[in-house]
Length: 443
Ligand SMILES: *[C@@H]1O[C@H](CO)[C@@H](O)[C@H](O)[C@H]1NC(C)=O
Ligand SMILES: *[C@@H]1O[C@H](CO)[C@@H](O)[C@H](O)[C@H]1NC(C)=O
Ligand SMILES: *[C@@H]1O[C@H](CO)[C@@H](O)[C@H](O)[C@H]1NC(C)=O
Ligand SMILES: *[C@@H]1O[C@H](CO)[C@@H](O)[C@H](O)[C@H]1NC(C)=O
Ligand SMILES: *[C@@H]1O[C@H](CO)[C@@H](O)[C@H](O)[C@H]1NC(C)=O
Ligand SMILES: *[C@@H]1O[C@H](CO)[C@@H](O)[C@H](O)[C@H]1NC(C)=O
Image (tube, rainbow, N blue to C red; front, side, top):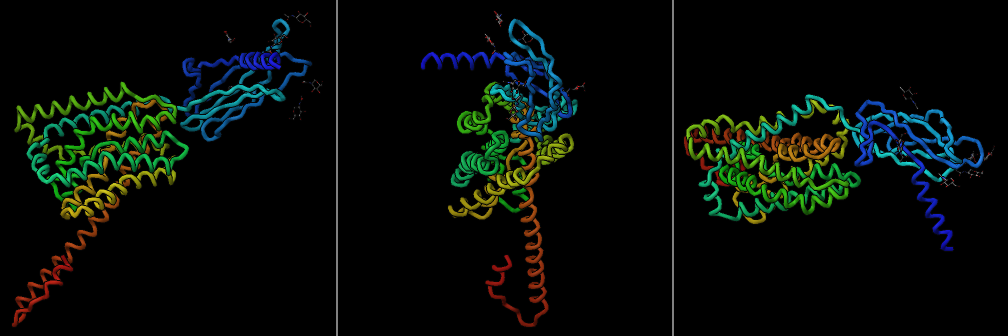
C-alpha cells in the first residue's frame, strides 16, 4: 500500500512539472500575469506528456470570470519529442476586459492535470492618474498646513470643560464609525475583501473639515465642532494605525494583502510635517496665519469637490461598478454616523446644538484621507476601492441638504408668524395675548 502512495505522490510531483508557461507579462515573483485593460497578451505554454498513443490531446482554456478576462481557444499544438516524452507547444491569447483578478485554467482533455494562471487586469499607466495622486497629496498637505495654522488650543480647552460631548464624539468617531464600516462591509460586500477595505479605511478616517461648515449652516455648536475636528484629526495619527493593525489586518489577510506598514508610516510623517509647518506659521507669523485661515476655510469643501469630480472624470469607467452595493455602502456609513452620533448625544441629554454638532461630526469623514490611504494599495485595488470613499463623499451631503431645506422653511415660517404677531399687536385695539404654547410650537 505504502509503495502505491509513494508512487502516486511521485506522479503528482511529476504532474506539477509538466507545464512550462512563458509570457512577458508574467511576474516571476508572484507568478501572476498582468494584463492592461483592453490589451491582448499571448501566453505560450509547453506540456510534457507520455502519450500512450499518437493522438494529440486538446487543450481547453477557461476563465473564472469572463467579465474580467477572456481567453481564446488554444492555437494548434505543435508536437516534438524529447527522449521518450512528447512535448506539446501551444499558446492562448488573454484579453483584459475590466479591472480585477481572475484565473485561467488550462486543462488537457481527458487528463487530470491542469494549470492555473492567475491574471490581474490593471489600467494602462496614464499621466492623468499620476496627476490625480499628485493633486490628492498636494491638496491634503495644504489642508494640513492650514489645519496646523488653525489649531486653537483655547477652543479645545474650552470644550473639554464640558467633557461629555467631546467624549461621546470621540467614542462615535474612533470606535463606532470603524465598527459600522467593518460591519457594513461584511454585510454589503460579503465576498469582496477589497471593497471591505475601501469602506473600512473610510470609516477610520478622521472627521472632515466640511463638518464645521455644515454645523454653522444647521445651527449646531460651532466651537464643539471645531474642537472635535481638531481632536479627531490629531488622534487619527494613533487610531488609524491601530485599526489597520487589528481589524484592518483581518480584512487585508482575507484579501491576501500585506499590511502596508511602510506606507502607513510614510503617510503619518507626510501629514505631520505639513501640520507642524502650519503650527509653526501660527506661532511665528500669526498675521499670515489669520489670512491663510480665512482664505482656506472653504478649502476643505473645494478639496472634496475637486477629488470627487476628478475621480469621477478620470475613472468614469469605474462607475460602471457603481452597483447598488456601492451606493448602499456610500449612503450607509455617513448616514448611520449622523443618526447614531446624534442619537447617542440625545440619550445623554446633551443640548440641541451639541447634538447637531456631534451628529454631523461623526457622519462626515475626511474621505480625502481615505483615498490617500488607498492609493498605496497595489493596482487594480487602489483604483477599485477608491470608488467607496468617493461614493461616501457624494452621498454625505444629501441628508444635510434636506435638513437645511427643512430648516429654511421652518425659519421662514417662524419669521412670518413672528411678523404677523407684531402686526396683530400693532393693529389690534386691544393687545392680543397669544398663549405661550403657540410660540413653542412654531419655534
Ligand atoms: C521553460 O521554457 C523556457 C524556454 O522555452 C526555458 O528557458 C525554461 O528553462 C523552461 N523552464 C522549465 C522549468 O522547464
Ligand atoms: C514519462 O515516463 C517516464 C518513464 O516512463 C517518466 O520518467 C517521466 O516522468 C514521465 N513523464 C511525465 C510527464 O509523466
Ligand atoms: C488512443 O487512441 C484511440 C484512437 O486512436 C482512442 O480511442 C483512445 O481513447 C486513445 N487512448 C488514450 C489514452 O488517449
Ligand atoms: C493571438 O493573437 C495573435 C495576434 O493577434 C494571432 O496571430 C494569434 O493567432 C492568436 N492566437 C490565438 C491562440 O488565438
Ligand atoms: C524509450 O523507450 C524505449 C522502449 O520503448 C526504451 O528502450 C528506452 O530506454 C526509452 N528511453 C528513455 C530515455 O526513456
Ligand atoms: C475524452 O472524454 C470525453 C468525455 O469526457 C469523451 O467523450 C471523449 O471521447 C474522450 N476523448 C478521448 C480522446 O479519449
